[in-house]
Image (cartoon, rainbow, N blue to C red; front, side, top):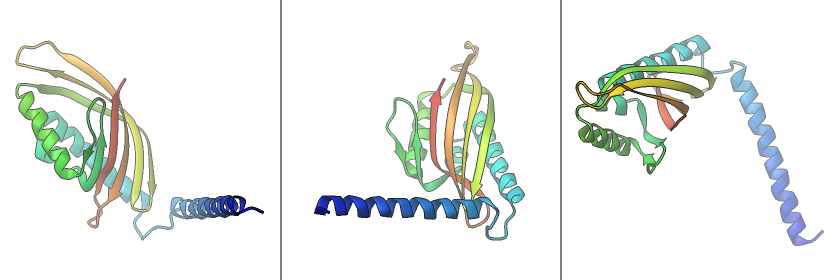
Length: 169
């Protein structure tokens, strides 16, 4: 067997071993072998995060919106550079608020379709619909978008968004 073939075989074998080990770990975590915290408690804390998101969005509270994210979070949105880190997310939130001071969010309704909890990580996707006016007396506008998010459990048992991506429909 040539050197290239041996290297390819070793890499492929390592990849298969990693996939098998990952699948076994995933199955173990998925089956509930976690650090004493029940699935129901995790789901209640994730729902609390979603309620905080709705309240912060409706009020346009930039500090509250920023606090939903981990320090090393990454937020991806259409037509904009990635926000990498909580401070970048804060800066973007503040710039958007300053650029649209009269904008009022009238409604924000998330429709979570799936949540999976694996240890200290959770994944979900959802749609949301929202309505807003750009200025007092302005025409009401609507938006519908898709969200994919990765959450990380915090040491105090709460959850925050570590990675998030939103795209309009």
